[in-house]
Length: 195
Length: 201
Image (tube, rainbow over all chains, first blue to last red; front, side, top):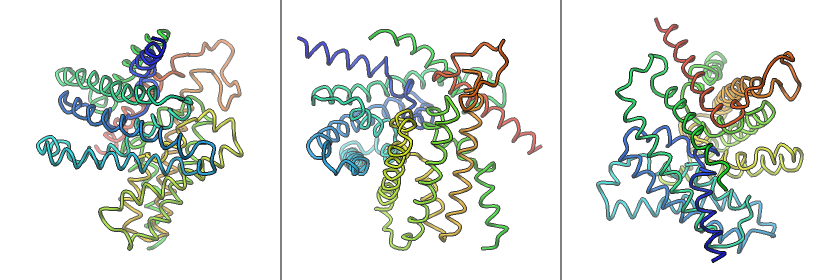
């Protein structure tokens, strides 16, 4: 029961309280770039969730079996980025084989998941927060992906409605998107005292 | 290449294709470390170091690169130099390293650096790559400092942790929070687009 309690708190913590996009500024590029339409945003969120769960778990295992406490610790960043690149390659091959239409619609954004800072950021946070248990690492990784999907879908929903609004000329495009994102973070700050 | 076109390559990074203000690259560190001047400046200098070193190495090995492996090679080169920068900061500026936390290792996935490796260093000679890296790095650092000046001044009334505002000034706590970063950058981008439209017409 105690384990379940910890895991549940960790999950809620990473999804809403410490949402990687809105409080840690990670994964801002796809957050601003792919949030034009809600179906694209959801697809992107799912791909990122899968990659981050896989990469977070694998890097945690590698970190704890080979790196921590040995001189190899300087190789940490190299290892992490190789695992992430490998995981993205795996997703790419899987999608191309089984969901060719989805693969086509993602285009360039799929390989770009490798350079999504939310993924490397989460792997680094697992190390920084000194997560000791495998199940907690898995829950945090999956939660980070779900939090990213939540943030990008909310943003896409707002931007679809903003198409109809009369935005002043110079504010169109990136500026108004950033200000909207700012107001969203303000809303998410309401969760700050929850845990 | 003549010195005039080298100068053009350098100044392009400062304004015409400023990575943050015009190309919207490298947004994560831009938003995350600009609550105060000191971390912003440290971040800018680290990025210049990594950008120059990785551009030199990528430019030297540009004829050996296989197309399908090039992104991986870029990333590994960048990760090596980021590790060097990170260990240096941990050894000599431990406070700064702790304050910046994961954002120094996150330079690995900074789109500016991979973007320059792909767009410039893998196609041109070493000298041009160095000048391009310096220009882009300086443009990034300038944008970071601009944002950090506004935010630190309004959030705490200080610059480089020295009080500069008059005593009646009430600090705007929101500027130090994520919301301040997003809204300030949004307003700066709007200002930049006003200036560009003016100079066009």
